[in-house]
Length: 92
Image (cartoon, rainbow, N blue to C red):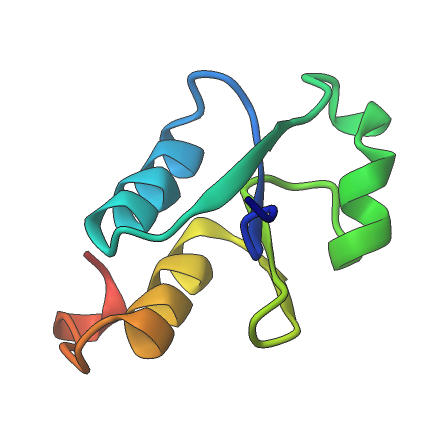
């Protein structure tokens, strides 16, 4: 079995990360969770990927997209994997 195409960089018990997890699960998407360092200044792996040290961040190998910020990620997942159902104002 191959690795999932989506990697989610997240923190344990992070409400913004959980919002993205709920959306990934809602669409039945396989993803790999990578838990990052709790200290903001230690998140070099996320900084190299997205240019920021904030989580959540995703890398989607299917589309070549790398992004951070939960609202942006949820909107991206809805556009890319949803059934074209936009939520009011793009916020779920």
